[in-house]
Image: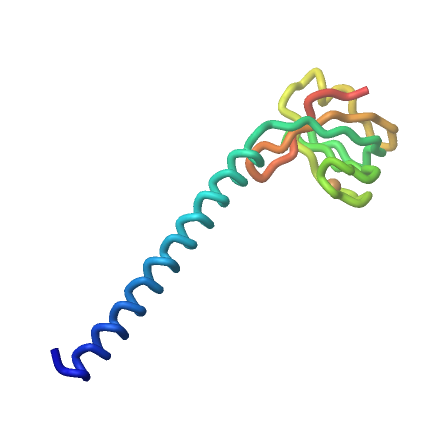
Length: 115
Ligand SMILES: [Cu+2]
């Protein structure tokens, strides 16, 4: 083997093993993403106190000015929640103070109980 061929072989060897290492790292990261996704997919119930700002029974949602929600890292804010059950919807009226339990469902936050 000539000297230049040897050098070429070494360079190729380094490039190949480096590539394999990078691929291994990518696979590890994919694995972490999957684990994160399934943990977030678990249905957790969140609670907060809120003042009812708006009730839209037809659209099936209510706008609430809610207090901070530590389990979601939320500050206090005013936002819409979905209400799927009519008997829950009937418990909301504008200006009323409520305590709600809700879950994340896709991009929606769905009220599960009202006190
Ligand atoms: Cu909010």
